[in-house]
Image 1: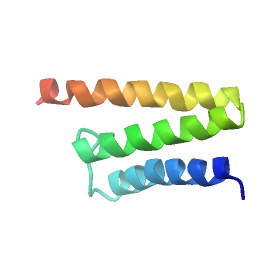
Image 2: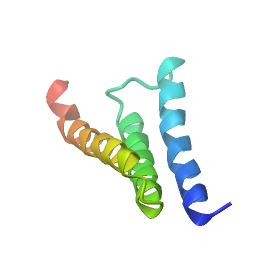
Image 3: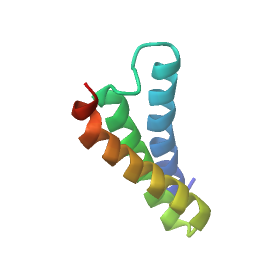
Length: 79
């Protein structure tokens, strides 16, 4: 297993943990922890995708990262 695999697995795991906790009702999508897990997970997964030069996932994860950052800074405005 390569370093990029390990990094990618860690990033994807964070995203999946956030999603699982949302589905079972432990975190809502406007919870800061949910958003932070998505920021970290997508940023790490984007890095791993960049390391292997897999551009479709660089775009996907990079966009997910930017949308999550936007959500983090706008979460207080919604409340």
